[in-house]
Length: 239
Image (cartoon, rainbow, N blue to C red; front, top):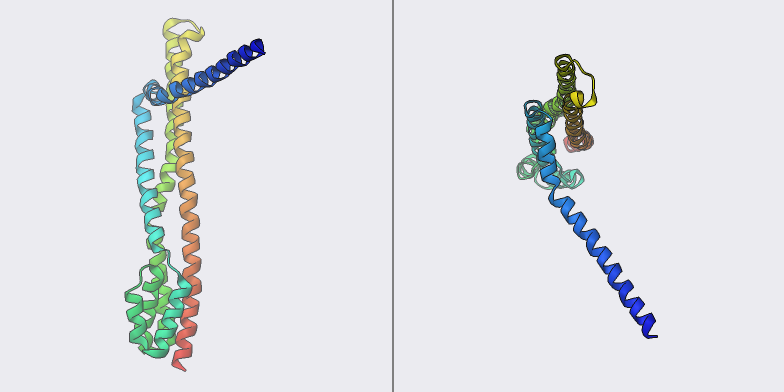
């Protein structure tokens, strides 16, 4: 029994030692990640890598601004339609306009423009809703084209760095008059690193872009449904 106990004790120490060693290796790798990233950034020619980094920063700034704006523009359209319907029934157009003034989002702004033209008739109100709806769509899509530009620009800059890196590699071959791997390794490394960083930036921005586009589509659909409901309410109120 004593031998078995000793064996189990030794095995336990070895097991926990292996776990500690694994965690220590992971910690060391996590500590050197930023250093490795910085090293690769410098190796990839800071001139082109810096331009790609600027594209990433500007793209993320636009994406974050759009996400915040779109989240603030998202409203409960069903609740707003019900409130406007109740206000029209009890207090008239002015009461409904007051509700729209106190509500945030593009749908409330569109409702206010339609109610403001109510004295000119339902058709005038409908034209105001359609026209101002186009204005609100433009505000929702503001700066999204710049984000798509950075998505296209980042890999193009990376490929440009690739071409320049290969040119440097061939220049080194011409100077050394030797095609050994050591001569061309530097130029090829620059070419590959710039390509990788450009593609990574494009992938990151593409994810944000798809989310923003889907968010805009959702808000536009809500605006269209709410606008139809408002015209129906105005027609019912006029009768």
